[in-house]
Length: 337
Ligand SMILES: NC(=O)C1=CN([C@@H]2O[C@H](COP(=O)(O)OP(=O)(O)OC[C@H]3O[C@@H](n4cnc5c(N)ncnc54)[C@H](O)[C@@H]3O)[C@@H](O)[C@H]2O)C=CC1
Ligand SMILES: CC(=O)[C@H](N)C(=O)O
Image (cartoon, rainbow, N blue to C red; front, side, top):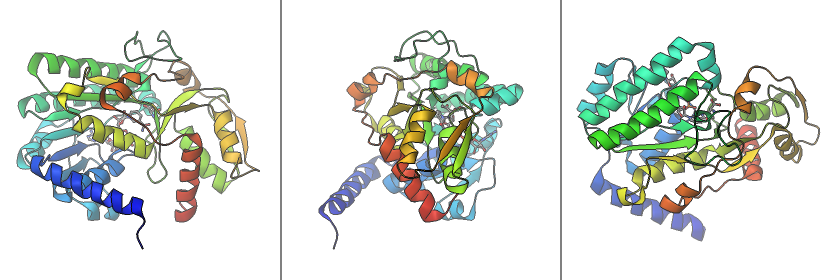
């Protein structure tokens, strides 16, 4: 038979569906075939109905993704393509995920400038024109070596040294400007490194914390590109997805700022190794820092997210041990390593 908690969860889901069927938010996700977009689309479709979520990207989607709901090709550099999708689908919420992440951005600065800056201009302009609620994620990478690193508050000096970070500060500031100047309902969360088992990371500085699990299962050993004592904020994917739902659903009156830090945990490669060794006692790690070390050394070690917790009750559920358990459970079940 069903457990009490399962029945409660089911009743809650139905209740939320009924609430939102009234509001019918119709949602477009850009850059939706990446690490965040795939699980986000799944969750939003559960909450608001499959027909209300359009996933877009420039890559060929998997058959599995096509089975889950509407997919459309849309290059955010081509404003008309996104405009057409907004108009034809009567979009209310625009979730703009397309970006080059920190490590790949440093390898192709001109493309990062085009995609992360010009692409964001296109999206902001469309959100203004069509009065969409707009979500753009920012990152711990929006801070730099002059920022306080432990803890890093919402408001402090931001002088990032990567094109990724510069583009994200640009998005934060321009989004807030569009909110004050034109009333665009801009909402932004600064995420730590996001850890997921079923989607691959897109080329960031925090990717080691995903690769390490795959190598632990495949080879029993991992060569880490960061030093063992490099502390960075991290978050399990389900908490990340929940934070996006929470900030998008939050009533205006709860939002006392438009850009919030959100965090869940902070750890170093040494600490992650110890947590992994509880499951795989023979797992070995070695260190060979590369150019990503310099990026990590300029980022927050611990993120202060007390404003998100106070204003709209941000409350992450998964800690380091929970994350390790979930990664191994998923990867071993799906033999996806
Ligand atoms: N994954 C993480 O740890 C974190 C992610 N974020 C932010 O979340 C957002 C999503 O990140 P991920 O899913 O991890 O990235 P990802 O790299 O996995 O996905 C980005 C997607 O953008 C698409 N894209 C590239 N060029 C495009 C174009 N011209 N038009 C439309 N789409 C294009 C790519 O095909 C890819 O599917 C990004 O804005 C990133 O900055 C922020 C902090 C942490
Ligand atoms: C923290 C991020 O924004 C991303 N994972 C990256 O490492 O670039």
